[in-house]
Figure 1 (spheres, rainbow, N blue to C red):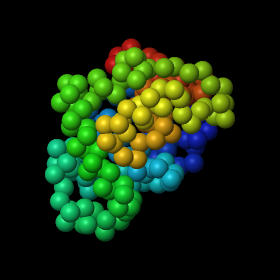
Figure 2: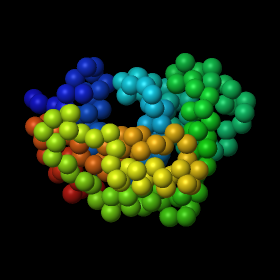
Figure 3: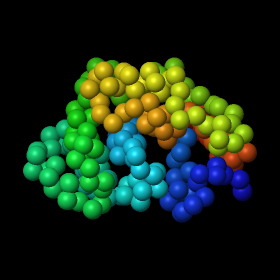
Length: 192
């Protein structure tokens, strides 16, 4: 079975690749979760974040943006002592900031899903990469997304992070064409 070469180093990466990566996500809670995890990954490996993902779910109230938006300084200090997450003060504070901005966008657009998917015209982009080396770190769409999110006050949301986010939530299908998931993800797109 051929899979993208980045996803062969450990079981968590294999499962994430085989079950989630590239599948279109339209659920606001999961879109928020992935946005926070991609920001936390900045400067680290995705494998590190996958290992800590369950810890993040527990530490951050299952990514309930309403609860996170109300975190006190005391709660933030407690999180900075929690080994289940990346204990970076800027990233933890950014999670609280981003929860507040996320809720504002939900209110403004009716859903975060409606806002975030507008950067790809509401439908996934299916790339046709033959090798991992062809996959870009960013795109015009991720540049636009990053600029818009920054303008709205989001943190840890550069273009590279936005592109990784787009890949994770299925806004782009960057499975290489020889990967067994490439065509499966295309089929799943019609169900989303």
